[in-house]
Image 1 (cartoon, rainbow, N blue to C red):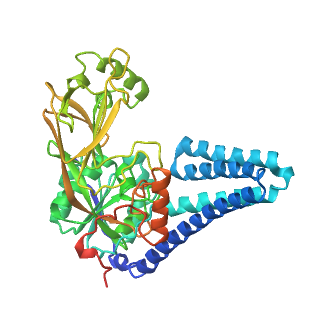
Image 2: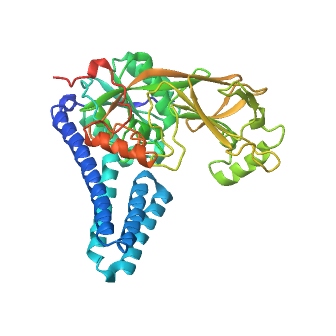
Image 3: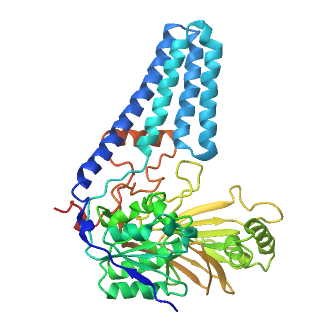
Length: 466
């Protein structure tokens, strides 16, 4: 077994950038506040313009008022939705504007329609910028001997492609580069015993969980370096997944926040644990090569009376005992699963709760319920079974001995995030629904942080270091 390579760099860079973080943070906060105010002003402009034209040229002006209503709805839904929902909303708004030009352009309304379109465009663009997650964390004192563990195989060699090792050395961060056969936990404990006062992991979410657990155990600051394939934990922490090298600045000018961890049968996870069809599929040897086929084959087998997912039993929040689940996901804080902006992410990772999502199995080709899935939050959760339970823990295959017991570890981990990164999940602002989103926009324009609840900050770093 080869030993990991250890690279030590100069420590001079660790103090650079901290003095500039204050103005930069204030500038970002001011920019967000201004864009929110611009969005509200543009929305008011669209409304006033449509009403004035409708009243001044009644009843023909009602056509422009109707056009304005559709355009405004499309622009606003384009802010609140993502993916195809956003595309569809913007397409409807654009079609309404084009239709208005075709119908009313020759009636002397062309200038009003152009102003209407510009107002809706400014409203949409400014609101999206205002809702962009960008939380200002208090600056933290840079560590004196930070260590980053690099898995060079994660993300198909992403760390090597971006020159992560050299960038870490330039910042005075000690690098432990893993080799085939290395024990990650042992290498991290060795670094802690050697005097490391901060830990970072450059790798997938499974590796992030190992290092995060050890950082929490030693009460050391932790940084998530997104060099894995999907980097879900980094996304929900507010680390820019496209800026792998910049994530190292968490130990240069970063702010600190406190987040939760969770555990299943004593094993720590940072994202979620899946049981049921997906968990069974990832156990199969051919899953990586043929994911869709493996999932379909697993689903067919899972629906049989003796399928592994039918062996699961649990108790609902209302006290009912249920059995069988096509999919069960227990997460470190709750995921947003609707079609709104930020779907598939967690609005917060510091609420001290587990998120439980269960998709009911079909019976005789029909679903058990009108809505086949249910979600709730809890501090602990238990799943019973009569045989070992296949599981996917942060995307890694595992088999758990029943009972499968989940617990949250509130405020367990001190996370550092680079000053230039968002420091919040894409869904942290929570623009779900038109009126709640409008209220959030008003809060931002008044100078409040975009999230409904600010991230938990440790008392030791509530004020920037002098």
